[in-house]
Length: 123
Image (cartoon, rainbow, N blue to C red; front, side):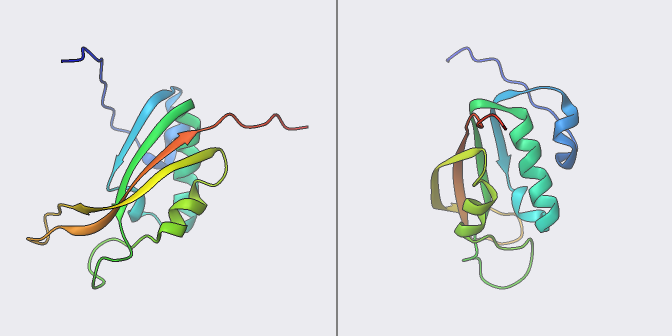
């Protein structure tokens, strides 16, 4: 046992900035892929606001390799990279198998790790 303090919060994902707190680690397990493009940009901005510089976002989302069209939208690797292009360093994006409740088999997913970087001061 590592003796780490962990706190889980329930909050409106499109209002993360109103939380008024920052965290070293933020985990998204199956949320990123439910947003349309404008909401996704709002969500990523909120993640930036609540993640300390040097902190990490760990994100698991549907991959564009999921067959069919049932369920949430599929995410291309390039969409992940573009969404986290400003204010973040994309450390890794790996293809993984995600367990879901609507199918007996696992589905293709992306597991991404991003680090919040300190932004340059605006002139």
